[in-house]
Length: 362
Image (cartoon, rainbow, N blue to C red; front, side, top):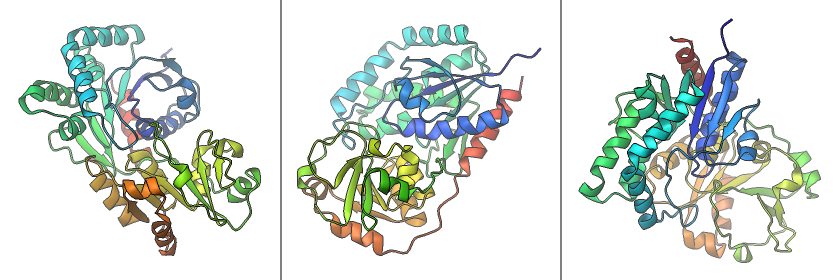
């Protein structure tokens, strides 16, 4: 009897965006291959991962790649990131042996990386098929934010060589251009589809019918919210994941709703966020306007903002506006614009089909 196919998912723990990209694909893959056995390796908690997956999985809390060190949701700690990445590269051979042993133990039929690169080197050495899936790659991000010329050239080439080791690098729209990767394949957007449950959300949070709901979602990276400076209006309520402790009736923890995050998002009148794939894709694909923080030094920003403006509604605010609460005019501008038809998350089925075909190959 043929054994169940085994998939190893290696996911970066830089906020929730990488998890948001790969989990809808895994859920779609289970529909096509219900006997699939999934092992997840990464730095995120089992609870956070389980909230987005429709079936059981084996979890190994093993961090397979470094991610940029952040001062907050928008600002990279450049010196700390350089130290972390350079140490990782300096210890490359020891780490590569770790990944070889991991693959030998798990014996996966396929590795899916979003987007650790060293495990892709190890997969190539063991002739284990591998697929990369992401709207960016860490070489591009490090090069734009942290690279210091020749000092990092060898490391960047090693990162790119890892990504080239995948049979295909699936890049969901809106993705960074990656001309340095000859296995790059553009696919449609990847996002979960929420259910609009506005009445349930209002009832469970004990809110009146006439309020507008603004979800605050900064992508899972700890960031102080200057809530004491934010506007207080009877017709606007701010929803946030986590305890707020302000005593203000217009600030509500979304846990109060008992609803899935994606349904909360789909039920809101706007989301306050920063440039990042997960929230942008989910907002546009659910028809929710985006109020976004400026992030001029992040390579994805231009592509994400252009896509969100083309397919949805987006307003950008400065860090000063965020900190002082002077952004109601921008919100009102969003609400005055006509809604556009939500974008279909066609990349989910496309990515699942590619992965299923790779699993089926000898």
